Amino acid sequence: MTARPSTILATSPITRVRLALVRLPLHAPISDAKVLTGRQQPLTEISFLFAEIGTEDGHEGMGFGYSKRAGGPGLYAHAKEIAPALLGEDANDIGRLWDKLVWAGASVGRSGLATQAIAALDIALWDLKAKRAGLPLAKLLGAHRDAVRCYNTSGGYLSMPIEEVVENAQKSLTNGIGGIKLKVGQPDVTADLKRVESVREQLGDTVPLMVDANQQWDRPTAQRVGRVLERFDLVWIEEPLDAYDAEGHAALAATLDTPIATGEMLTSVAEHRRLIEARSADFLQPDAPRVGGITPFLRIAALADDRSLSMAPHFAMEIHLHLAAAYPRTTWVEHFEWLEPLFNERLEIRDGHMLVPDRPGLGLTLSGQATAWTSDHTEIGSPRQ
Image 1 (cartoon, rainbow, N blue to C red):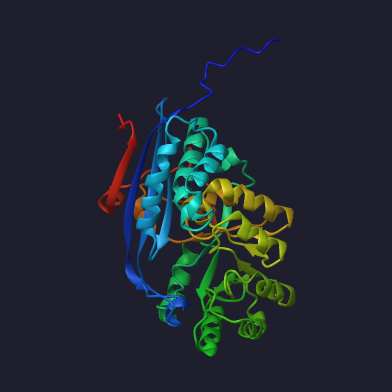
Image 2 (cartoon, rainbow, N blue to C red):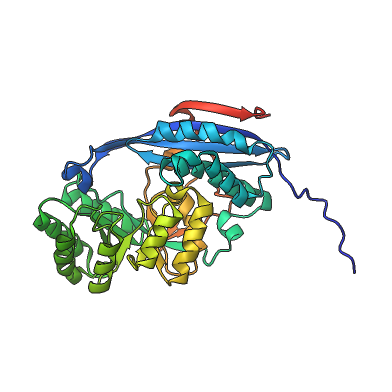
């Protein structure tokens, strides 16, 4: 029997790209170990690059990238230069279009800002493809689960007194969040240990607890503190060393009982491959906006799966929930409520898990507040009808 030809258009030419630079202010300045060691200033706002891509058949996709402290205007400027290369292209050909965009800016590299500027466009293309299919992005990618274990980070910063950290943790657990992450890495290691001990005593032994040193220990300190932290039964120790010290992280992963987590600061597949091949992490923490979008993230996930690694994508839960749900092995997703004012929708949390929404694509629409926080925007191609 001969199959009847489909009446659905196979191609979806891109006719419009809209870019916007949005500055999200935080309610209060926050500090991690990088601030306490004098390497950075407290974080007061986050810059976002939003991309909306429209096609000839009337479909639209939305994606975003971000930068903490410096870099937001640079992402926006680079995206404006390369985005015209998408006009007239078939939006379905996401892999080829990612290559086209990276080559359009290849003289400034294939990692860092050059690829982070591509992320918003790439994520918008995946959002669009899932919407055309009428599927949540996780389902389009091939979900392994409908909910992902989640832990809170935003309540455990070093700028908060320990009493506030404990209160935030208890509130998160009451609201259904499944784990708590604390910032450590202070110049005074004993202060870190007292902080972890206090939270563990208050929350009990059964609550999943993680710590994050934000790259502020050297190798001897990380080994010494890591041994002491064993008694707290942590889910992982995150970024104990410089993000690019693959060998140092590998030594910790080989000698400590507590798992090692790292990867969030890396901005390419190649950098993650080095971590994976060195066996530097038990939990890999890629960040889709930082590595250039969902397309390179999926390449990293395939490498991680091949080595049987667990995964805990960094930040941007609105994107990473879908990607974690499509990863076949153990996953966690990081809860930050910071981005919620940018969107009309909210993610649901229940029984320690974040639920994959049943809305098509990422399941997000931009709020009026996002428009109010827009500092610059540009339209490329045909205006929206």
